[in-house]
Length: 207
Image (cartoon, rainbow, N blue to C red; front, side, top):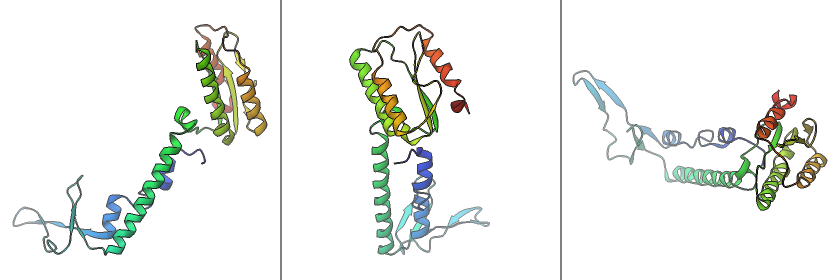
């Protein structure tokens, strides 16, 4: 799937876009019971001519009552549409919570610099971090424009001097560089901040 944010995805595939929100469906399968102000009574009075004539639905959030007039075929049509929408939502949730996306979310930027700060990670944790980073490089970074990797250390380590165009070759090169990193490297208490500042100086990222 393309790297689309949830807000944009909902704009494209949400219930409102498909005219399947509760209020939109109700307006298509019935009509709202009207209330008019009766001067002699000095209050709003709801029409009751349809009471008992049609099935009714009371909307919880505002108490509005709808008289349902649609035939069975139309109701079943909306049931089918909603079932398909539910399946689409399930697929989206499964996609969001799988592979690199469950760790890093969905990358939205076209140019990124990933700062690697392994701290005092144990060897097994170090390898798990590299597994996760390799996954995001292959699954998501391949879909953007430019990237770079910087490791926080006493002597800052950069995969490239500046962000580089994404290609099959550059992604493979970055993964290889990642797996050649030493587990332990000298660091200072300012290493993380310095790595972040270095990432922010990349013109492609800051623009």
